[in-house]
Image 1 (cartoon, rainbow, N blue to C red):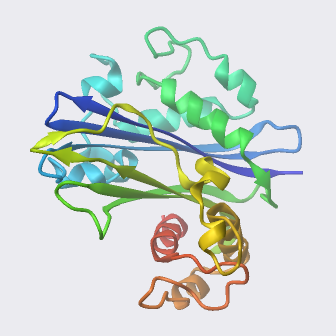
Image 2: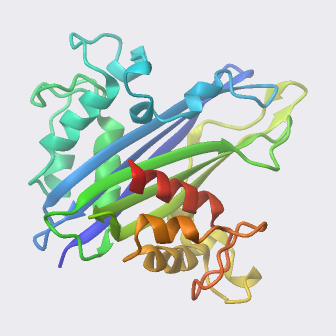
Length: 286
């Protein structure tokens, strides 16, 4: 059986007490019946939040691959230096191409010195988080009818949460791995990551560390008790994903969420899906 997986590695890094860097790396994988990677996509967002609760550069909320040539490689991307003149998007694609035909275990075994691998032609990026995201995507992959003619896509959208404040800034990132064939969604997997920070007297009080997506939090998210369906967030997200499968771009566009961000007619799903829906459409239209 073929599978579709979506994995994410996210961290918040305090830089002094007046800046916080948030880095989110995602991988989408399509696995064949033997657990080997048929196809892979990598995307990443990295932004800095000031102690006033605002991003230092709003453009940085746009994912690196989505920015394309407009994105300038940083020392964090390359470990300090790179001999390649190609873009982040091209180098991430080179990594994704390299892992095709490999199992997640084989990807985890890629030799990397200071986070970089000399064996991947066309990629001079620090790939530690790429490898971990691929492993998580493969580990959490679900059965899906992903055909060899399907195109795998990955979309990432980061926005400031509507309830974000100067003292409790929050930025939400929507993630979607989508298999598309002939303008129709074959399969998809969505997830949401919430980067919650705290500021007191103009200084960050949040600590550095990993951030988990809602799927990673699992039953600990606590929606089951508050839901009329008595279902956890990831279970309702699965229902949304199942509803999307088999639909054309036009059908998805026509299912506009209501003012509460919900879509009628999705069995087993009453969560707000407007952000997931917009990000999924971005992937489908890529």
